[in-house]
Image (cartoon, rainbow, N blue to C red; front, side, top):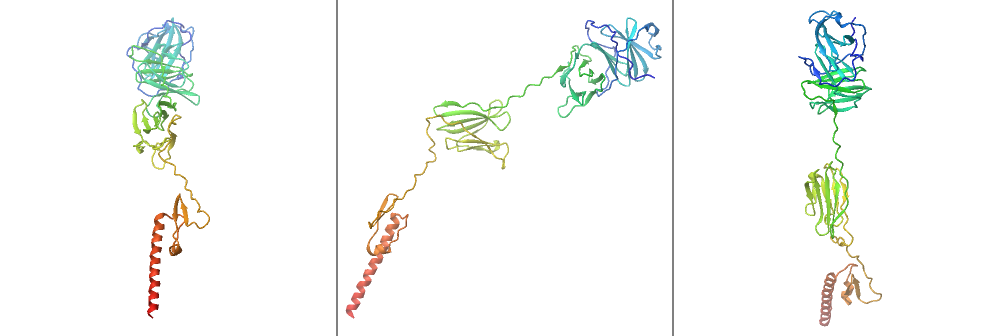
Amino acid sequence: MRTALRTAIATALVAGVAITTPALAAGAAFAADGPVAAATAQAKPTAGTDAADSADAKGKSTQEDGVFVRNQILPNGATARIVKLGDTHYRAEILKEGQRVGTLEADGHPVAGNDDGTFLVLFETGLTSTWQGNYLPGARPGVYELVDGTRVELTLKYGGYDLRTVEKSGEGRVLVHLNGTRQVGVLGKAVLVVEPDGGFAAYVNGSMRQAAPKPVVEPAPAPKPTTGPVVTLGECTVQQVIPSVFAQLTVTLTNDLKKGPKAVLNDEAGKPIVVLDRDHAADLGQGLTIKGANTTTPKLGQRTQGGDTPYAWTAFPKLPKGCEKDTATPTPAPSTTTPAPAGNTNATTDNGQTSVIPKGGVAAGAELSAEGDSTALIAAGAGAASLAAAGLGFVVLRRRSGARG
């Protein structure tokens, strides 16, 4: 009974052979783009097997009852004799100096052998790909770029490696899933061999330049804006740059005694987006507002959304010492009332004003409130005088009547 895999390129292959240009078998093609599996390939030297026992004529049976296809010269000088055993079943017998030193068997899927950096991939179609080098040992999880610009991602989950395509959104599809053995994957024109330790090699068909997969180093993210120092621009003008609530944006705060506060929202390159000042103290579209724009202690409010979202408040930088204080909102003087002096002086004092209270009938009808003013007092005096005059006329009239009567 044939096993899916018999042996790999044997360790008997000469090590340290000078690196040669990667070679691809004449007429070779690649399997369809997509996930492919591979069988294990263990080195198994076989001594005492004479290569002359196998027929070299194409189409004739070998000692293993297969049909000879061709001989493939490997970069390290060994020979792979390709034998067809079925429609999707091929074997590569590895020979060195006339001795068979290893075997690869592709039964329905490709397999690979690796002898100290010399790779041979045998496809189930009988085609082969062989090269030396292009290997990145012990690769860590991450994104890698092939010599033709193609990118693949090596991931490690549950103790096993997967080689995936790189997609703009979402997780890429699996090209190679390792189960503890060497695996083969194909992506476009690239043939990939992944070792159990995560190291992998790549050969790009048709490329004049070959190289090992190179880790893609993503640029470090731009540092987040931080609050800058307060800078004095004039005798009573200061400025400070603070972070915006929007990522990578900044706000320049300027506090000027004469011109008032100014807030400038800047983009990543420092270009102004919107400007707020004393005359234009809010921009709801950008979520910015200045509170106390007519004072020397204004505050900037920022928020990323409207509605009831609260503002994040930041005080403008303080004016330098020696600048005038805020006089925009004067403090009213305290109100005091001086009590009237003791004794009947016929006068009352209210907020520094003294009024004389009329005597006689006028005084009897006069009423003054605690907060009365001169106008009310004059009106009351005039009314009282009229009543007195009317009363006087009434008395005279009575006297005249009595005289007649």
